[in-house]
Image (cartoon, rainbow, N blue to C red; front, side):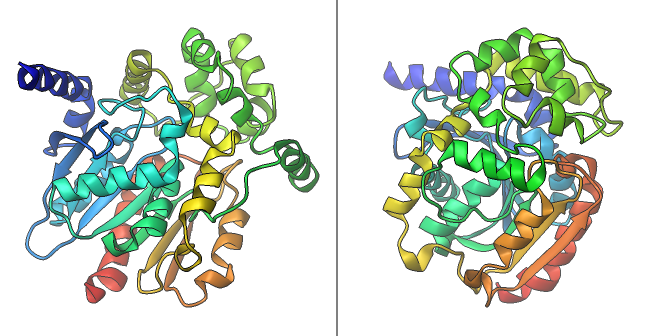
Length: 356
């Protein structure tokens, strides 16, 4: 009886992500219960011949759909593709406690998925918070990753818990506006309800045609809430289709926005977990692993200079790092998908395949 009940639950998880699965061509829709008892839904297509499998980790608020142009191109070249619904999204479990989102636990979840598919190693690709996820895997399970590709957000360094007022003040002084003030909104108990009540404004602000809108209507403290309550609307970019918008609205109407990705940062739980669980010799990826970093030149929050500063760190002095700037805003994996797919293929052939 319990087995039948579990099968029904897993089937319902898969159905929740059917639209996304269709968008990611022939990938197989699968589920696994990871070692801490949570369900993860993911899309998986095995590699052909001697090609490696690429793990794609999306950010907030996103879904595997964001990767579909890139993954379709690489699948056609024989690369394996593994794309989880990250924790809190789609058919994956949605824990209520922010403590469930600390990096050491999510890293273990990812490795459990790799184990389920008998994948010894993967090439890890991340965008936005997905970059933090693959950074955590580098810290905790570096033997499971042969190379890393980061987009918009670079490798996440181990840092102490934040003094948020001081950090925001420093950002105002350095950049002329706060970069992370919106984190406080996402950490508020009514954030999801406010966004659900103003979904058209959410779409308009998160995916604006003019990236500078983030400086005035999103990033600084209080501006996102104010813009939503005023039903602010701005033109959408040409690269984001009506189908993309409809899929976004449908996904987050159904599942809600997993704001714990921000709560765990604002509370300091994420940083404290890093400090507690990551030894000094694992604070950076191993030097043997090539790194690709795609910079979004027009990103008003994940600024290019932050990425350059990260990879200029002494801990990366012996790494093979390829950096490319894209004339794009934060969602470059969608707007520049064809170019990125080609660039990743070239990087894999030049820097990754020879070391496997």
